[in-house]
Image (cartoon, rainbow over all chains, first blue to last red; front, side):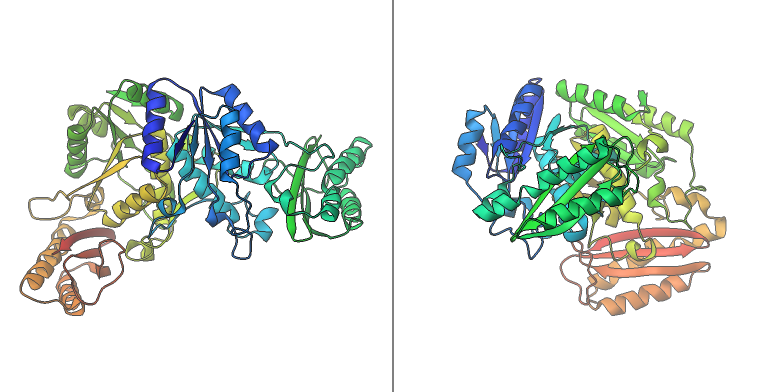
Length: 280
Length: 280
């Protein structure tokens, strides 16, 4: 497994792989890898000849009051996991080369980044789409693999790739969960045992909404109110949003149709957790 | 010479050229080619194995009150000129494929697009950087060639390429002029004979400023006032801006240093003309 730290070297390596006819996939990560990330690598492996994992805790997607400094890091462990899964290249650029003096370019996806996490994390998605655009230009992949847990991020990146005619296929991978249902996330490491228990309210909400829909409830307001009560019954929780929306536009809906996205963000203690599912 | 009209076909063609080891250059144009464009093609030819010219009158870089509809077009003549210069591929996408329903992504270069033309053409540079980013993703060039006449455009594109780590070398080509000094521009075709005569005030201003600097004037205000008087002495003219600024940041300067950009925009009749030079 090669470890590459400079942008120029990564680009030359990707050029060589492409010249050799290899299909390149990229898995962008912020490290502190868990089973969810590993599943992305396995999917990448199945779809390509060469897997590039990027490891970069991107400062521009954290708000000033957010957890950039505290974000968990374990580079040695991450490299070991990547190696054991057969990742070919780990690209870990440094922030100084990624954001040079005078840099001032933003890639912005306008509408679908506004609701949901866009409301409580202003600037977050600009940071995400800009850095992913840069990482794509560094790694020159044919495919890129993202988790569906970050649904809005996946939607924004898919939209960016389509709108900018980037010749890259985006693959979304279903959320990987702990045995009790909690969606895997690097931020789960912030939870103390009691918060960890309360955090199950997210998955329970998804299940409950699905059950209500299957039993005939189509009124989004009723489903949301039921979910909000369920979450509030769990200690240490504070709802950021409960949204039933169109899976393409992320616009809020009132009556459930064939396919609806249920997206949640809940603070449990100081930790902000998200989860989602398609209801159909 | 191949003429390609769909994005997918262009991308596959560029992949093939790259697999064959060819160096690809792209010359983005809005057509109605004049000697300035032809010079860009010649430079492209010298620096690469395959020259791709794009021909697309991009609606998003025109303001609502600007000349998108009236912009001069001559596709047959353009193709003939491209052919005679040995262009390998003309990529002429249609606006419907370029801007699909729901598209909402903008590539924005923040600071250097604000002064000069940014003041009187809000949104113009967002349209330029976004479409050039798209055209780069369609044509996958190693090099891209732009004229120095559109100095701020060249600066914004160079900044975008650097900031987004696009693996493309940008080459700026000196302005080509008519025998009497008028910078070549597709918009010169709008000028009637009297306006055409007045339009010489732009080049005369550049020459005068250069002369003043060589003779020891370093005060930007004095040079600007002299130029403004010169322009106003020409009938049908209305000054949009006369700027002496830093060639990298485009920030206005008060005292001329080693190298200063003089940039002008002047309306002559209804036609808005720009020109610039480096004073050193």
